[in-house]
Amino acid sequence: MRTSFLIDGFNLYHSIKDAEKFNNTKLRWLDLYSLCESYLPNIDTKAKIESIHYFSAHATHRVSKDKM
Picture 1 (cartoon, helix red, strand yellow):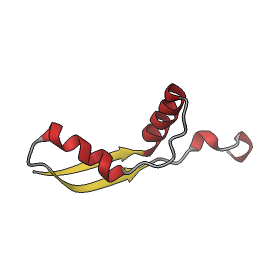
Picture 2: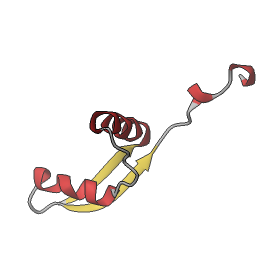
Picture 3: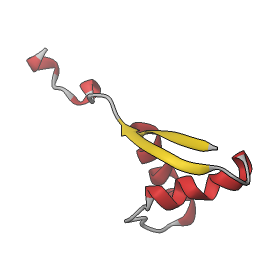
Picture 4: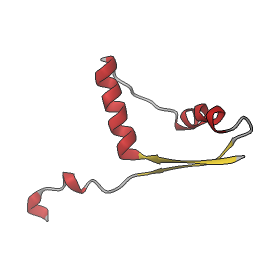
């Protein structure tokens, strides 16, 4: 079974920041391939990674009001 993963950059970023607060530690690196691979047994024993798509939106909330 070919499996694709879609990763929302903002949700991932904020989840990591929450985990840092909860564990009182800094999380520096994340292996997205290994993260996705860890989900495969929950999908199907024959599942294989076909693709991983990482995406994000423009952070318009960070734009100064003067520039709008």
